[in-house]
Image (cartoon, rainbow, N blue to C red; front, side, top):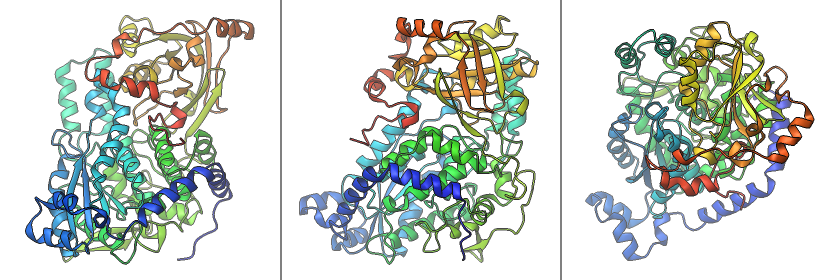
Length: 615
């Protein structure tokens, strides 16, 4: 299929990333290519004792194939647990995969499990302070699972916030292995996300009790599958698709359906073909190159995806020797139009997005506008990203792919580049004397995108909620919530502040949030300058703000500034920042085990990672 001319800004950003990453990318490719040349069958390098250990418990037929060292052996790395709705469907996958692998003349072994925690459960609790670091734990667990050198390809089973980025970072450390990501899909639609948010606001305002709140939450979260709003989990699935690591169209197929099972089985057959022993060797380290990362950035912006990926995509790219920064997000955001309206950027959920044409329609629109690199390697085959303009269906029990519909099934949810919801992607970089931050404005009304008001400073999110309940925040103000960065307390999401701040904004007050912490992937309609870097615990200037200082948050011009006389500001810099009391965040709920990570972690714009990728 002819490829339209690429947008010049896409080419500019891609080339800028390529130049910036030249040394680190070459070093990465040299490392994984050397591993790939070690032998066409990974386990051929093992001694007899090692090998016998590796298949001692395998079924007899599998044992014969593993011993012969001719057929590919697939590693299954899974985030399965039956507490989390998004990962509960993965329970059945290993047996399906093993059966399909045998049909394809291969074997598959469950190589290892990785932890999967839910920000929705830990929100506002001490456990949330482990959440961001769990990404790096998952990456390490993935590497441990693959370290036995028994495998020729990998299937990564995971869905949610830190799980997919962690699995991908770990898989990239074994970049010579072909890898496919196998999702579980979203739960069927329940109580709408908009109605759920209204109930939360009423609870925050004291209008209803816990019984009514729990009843609403149970109607929203009611079955197997991921949450249906467009937060980090579903942004992950979009990214795996647009970066060429899913089977085309598999991101948003619901669990418990024949199509979901067929796609899972097909993933095993396909990854066998991508191995050294198959006809189309395609190592993941070559799939994830500069063009794939840029495609991921474009997809995030075109769909109004999660702000958490201003951390995760940076860390993923660095795991492949590619260096990106927030300027790359900002530059592309000015060019990439918003084509999807999914909550919190609209009222629809991901099931409605999928029904309207979903990823296949979206990718075709972006390709035809020259806003995606089409000529990339993907796990789907030689047509590059054009494969992903097709949708999977079952015909007489057989899995086939059909072209995406010619027009959107609902133009209020999924639109075209000719009639976008916004001419830009709605993600911007703010900078000034408070540092650098990101803000997602795709759900923020234009009238609320500029706030100039006195600061009210908090060191704990609970203190802000308590001040609201005491009636102290019925005014225009900028909430400055400090000591929420990765070094301070692991950078928990501050999503529990959303109902409170939304209530105040709805009452007519001009309010905004400025923090070195994170918001949820569901960052909503209150302007929030997040991930402020350097963080306060690293002597970032946000720590110099005093109550009453006038703060300017201007999302139109990209400004985050304390409007304090320069002489006063310089005097505060000399005096330096008063250290926060972090003693309540160093132990309990396992936090003491992560002290080393808090000391090692990089800043938010470097991906908030504990790995020395550039060493």
